Length: 504
Ligand code: FDA
Image 1 (cartoon, rainbow, N blue to C red):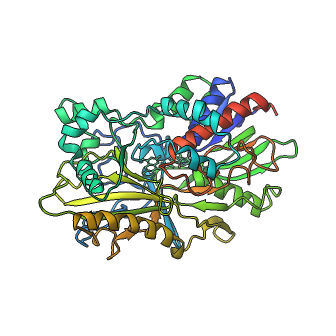
Image 2 (image 1 turned 180 degrees about the vertical axis):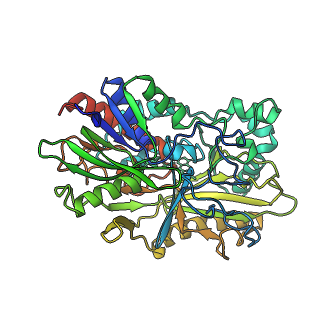
């Protein structure tokens, strides 16, 4: 066998890719993981692996000339974003005409930049969205397994109640209660023992030093510290970074052939390789996996792919908003970047909303309560292939965000009226109160049971699997990575038991 052949290849190293890599490695299957981003392990000139949110440098974003933070202005001032040198930074914002999508880039994918919130969805909504998946094994086996592997835990409540770092969450809780709304603690993968030591001054601050969307230098159990470390520990898994898979095809003997561009830190393609494998696992995320399959279908490389490839995309009904509090209700100059509480009104039959109480870690008092609302938006969009640019385009229109905004507004109008407060109109670049033009939770494009069988086996092609967020049909009602991880565990258990993986 040639040096460029592997029994199994995994594309992408986020949740879906990391689970696949570990379980393949444990099964003794020699596996190559291809990741377009870099490995975030070496400190920069400042001695830190990641840059901070308040002084972003080239490490912050994926080949941009200026940062594109979700909160773009403060008091309408362009004080947040900074000019940077293009570099394979950790956070990307992929912009389509009606929607921008934030994604992580690097070994660990979204786990490097996300808030670490680890929520298991309500069983009834999970069943509604994924009726072809038996709920008992999910709730008895795969969700507990995913939570254990990811290191999900809840903030110790006594510390939460007493620390200045969660004043913002306690204020938002009290205001929700005034409106008759329930709040819940949400588990997180951040190490709360570490956070307490940050607060005590005995550990280097990370969550308490405004670090999150451009990476946490300490404290967060991102995938490189959990699944991927374990995958490498099997001795069967090789990582190749700064390697972007551009095309897939199948040789007459059924081998998959990948065209892989290797880039340097300026973005220049330094080599284009062909890598072959018997079994191929797609974990490039909703955008990445959908683009690879759509391109393969539309260019005729994998013509048997289903017409369902590219369909069923949604942003989990994401809307971000801020409320302005009274001067006697400060939210704190000191805010942990790690969210631990949410307003849970998902059981509301007419207007279900699950709203994460988010920090605004500005380092000074802002009197802002910030939220990321997850709403039940029924709209779905389709990706089409732009042959001239060789890319997938997401055809989400701004009008399709209207149900998300209406749902968030219905809930937060209640909070405002009970507390005699108003929205903030200065945070999202113009005078909008609701940021409906970006999302953190891209889901769908290769939906389970439609573009694949009920286990992520891609229709039309043996030995081709999807394990990431593109399987979930646009909405899951909570922050999605626990569901992505649990579904990937379920797929790998089934596929390794039934299919001739690596030897097909
Ligand atoms: P994911 O996007 O994680 O990984 C895909 C990987 O594939 C990436 O590393 C990418 O670089 C790589 N890739 C893509 N195309 C490729 C190609 N052609 N070749 C090679 N590599 C390629 N969720 C949650 O549950 N709780 C939370 O608190 C948050 N918070 C949050 C904050 C922010 C700022 C963001 C951006 C996102 C969140 N999320 C979240 C969402 C969560 O991070 C997201 O749902 C998962 O990371 C998706 O996992 P996947 O495995 O689908 O792909």
